[in-house]
Image (cartoon, rainbow, N blue to C red; front, side, top):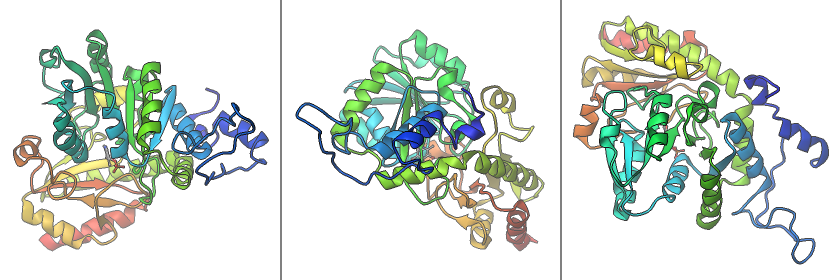
Length: 385
Ligand SMILES: *Cc1c(COP(=O)(O)O)cnc(C)c1O
């Protein structure tokens, strides 16, 4: 590709070509707020028939995201969960899945409370430690991971798992939400499908829900086109435009938020009330080298454990600039309490086994001046003195 990643977030070749000709030179891609399209003649189509099937604004966004992830196609859905729900329609009753045990809580809720009733079977693994091949059954059809995971930052070796998936003819799916295409491209490392919650880094402003499926396999692409047309959870034109706008600043936001995460992680590691800090950018992080091998950055998410639940509560009660809110990946710094928020539906024994205790806090750094973020944390921690 001709341009660097920073430039491509703003100017994809496609975008320039279309803007020059079809859209009166509009620099911002137009919002096609239409449900249907008139046909020139019987048997002819403009290429667009009905917006459940295709809409120019959504199609443009899909091409942008496909290019950023090096896929042949992308699908824009109304949320990350809508994307994962659609993806699971690729499978049949009786199919078995190997799934990362420390997944986003909403994905586990979907698998256990919706997909299981359709006779899908799930084995939850720790992909850092468990023997993957030993868990493959005759009916295993796919491997589904996140790396780093949410919130414990397990890092799995994408290339290694891709080799196993190829050998056993399994579809290899990576939810790449946590690093965004700016820092990691699983399809280039051998994955077949990438999932994004576009609500997070791609949108970037905590104002729009969106989700993506990206693939480089033609059979998957063809089936997903049929499924999106049939089930109807495609992203609306205006929301597609908001995502296009968000992606233009992806590079700047990721760089600034990552810098903030690194400084805050180092500061937290020095506080005596903090038992441990889990951030891939810390030299002490066990999978630091693997992160460096397969990603271009360490991300903006960090998890830390206070001495006990009461100390975690004190922090949540006293942060002020930093908001106590679910979600991540936006310009605002947010703190999450996984036990009652993102992971409330994960069975307690699974949660504790994964190391998520009532003293665990998760931080998604935004792009504020880090001095202000550190001052907010300092005043929250001053309640212990
Ligand atoms: C938020 C999130 C999702 C779900 O996306 P929504 O847009 O909230 O539906 C899926 N995976 C990960 C890793 C997430 O952080």
